[in-house]
Image (cartoon, rainbow, N blue to C red; front, side, top):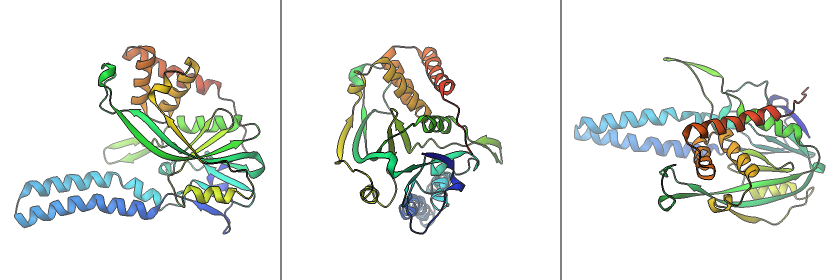
Length: 296
């Protein structure tokens, strides 16, 4: 296993590159613009000012999301590169392309260090956005996310990889100049995670589909049967304190602070100030215990 910068990843025409779809992003962005365009047209033809104003505001909001489209057309828009000797996995989100190119953001895993691979179909139960932290249990609402995950069972020492993932998730965005001043921009999108000490999880949102990736691995890696997994809120009640703390810290590192606060309040009955201090302590402790890594 080797950690490296993205620019140091060797490119080869024979590699199979899995990236986020440019076509889907273009179609989605066009559909978002279609609504304001239609509303503006209605306002112009009917000589009504209000629809025109609403359309202009809506178009402006769509433009604010142009980063998602621009990122799809950059060279950094890739998740996995499968080669003859192993796979390069980029754990920096393609949406954070503006981060420093000097950061370590890719791990190379030779096929000989992959004990097994599998596809996991997950249904993740989440507390709804309208759920009040201090509300009664009977009034809680839930949402469900369905996703596919490629899991690689790794052999060998993953300490350096764990430290690199933690460092990347805690890294603040670089300052960017705007007309109103300067600000930091960081998109909270975490496509790669390390579960335990040996299971590398890759959330598959790219093309070609995940079955093509597994088929590429099959000649050199043991491929287990596809499994389905439900992650429910009720199952979290059975976790011990150490496991709960790890989960809350993962939510916070991924930028899902509301969920982190909600689960802290539900499981530990803390007030707002205690909740904030608790989450800050979890993040600080994980950074403090993360081992130092040496890079070339």
